[in-house]
Every structure is written in C-alpha cells, then in structure tokens.
Amino acid sequence: NAGVTQTPKFQVLKTGQSMTLQCAQDMNHEYMSWYRQDPGMGLRLIHYSVGAGITDQGEVPNGYNVSRSTTEDFPLRLLSAAPSQTSVYFCASSFLETQYFGPGTRLLVL
Amino acid sequence: SQQGEEDPQALSIQEGENATMNCSYKTSINNLQWYRQNSGRGLVHLILIRSNEREKHSGRLRVTLDTSKKSSSLLITASRAADTASYFCATAVMYYGNNRLAFGKGNQVVVIP
Image 1 (cartoon, rainbow over the protein chains, first blue to last red):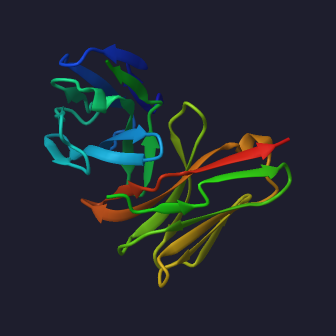
Image 2: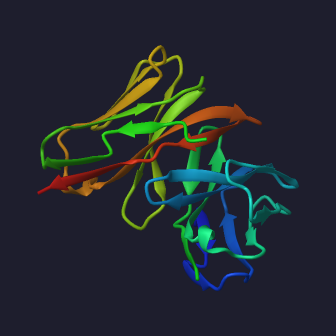
C-alpha cells in the first residue's frame, strides 16, 4: 500500500493563480481531511469528507474548495491564490480513530 | 478552533533522559491522541487514550489523561537522538463514526546525543 500520497511536493504560485493539490489514498478510508500547517499555529482543519459526495468545512475553509467524487481522491482547489495561503498542506485519511497523513505539499504564493 | 495547547513549547534534553510534554484542552472529548512529526515530513500517530482511560503505555511512551483538569501528558523514557521531532496532541470528537481532530501547536523536542 502506498498509503496517502500528495502531489505536488512543492509549488510556487503568483497571486491570483489557481491550482489543485492532489490527494489520494489506497486504504479504502471513508474519512479524509485537509489541514494547513503554519509556523507556531499547529495544524488547522480546512475541509473534510466523510465519504464520496459528502464534504464539509473545517476551521479555515475560506479560499479553498473541495469535492469528493471517489473514495480514493480528495483534491483541494485554490481558485485565486493569495499570499496568506502560503503554507504546508497535509492531507489525511482515517479509519475510526487514527489518521494517516500524507507527506505534505509546500506552497509559496508570491 | 485550536483545542490542544502543549506545554512546554520547546524542550532540549540529553540522550537517555526522559522527556515530558503536557497538553491542555477546553471541551469534552472522545479521545486524545499524540502525533510525531519529523522535520519536513507528515505526522505519524503515536498513541491514543480514550476519555474513560487514565493512563496508557506503548513501548517507551506513557500517556496520561485527566479529564477533570482537561489535560494530558506524554512521557518519552530513555530518549534517543531519533526522538528529535515535533510532538502534537490532538483532541478528538466523533463525527460520522470517525474522529474529527483539533491539533495543538506542537512541542519541539531536541535530543542531544
């Protein structure tokens, strides 16, 4: 099993550009989530999904969209990137009590 | 909102010593989990303690939970250089049969060989 994979590993965007951060898992987990990690802030929940077709907002959803068309994939879209979205983004999937994290995507918005 | 708040924020110890980290939270929880993050990597689950448990052990890890004080502690015994990492507590509430986690800001631990 590859576990949770994320692409790209690193991305530089200009303000106003759009992009999609990819997340995939091969563990057949229903629950998936996106976090952002900023220095001194820990991890903050952006969006999550309890299964295909069901998504909901987390703590910091503004500026991000998600969809969940399959169990395996949970992409995170930035429609118009802003410098405040410079961060490290982690995707996670979980079965019951434990979350499994991907390696992260480091995003720089200029 | 941020649930867990770890204390101390940074810890530097000699190899072989014990490392203790504390975490406080504000609301009722289903369980509390500790995760480790090595530099530049994703988080890795270490240990989970349920709200009706007071203490749990896993290898060199010992976690305690005091729900009356809304606090938890993580003890790493006989630390090794490989334990150098950031440690996060996360409080969990059940949602659709899974845990929705709220993470603290993390504890940076440096173990000096």
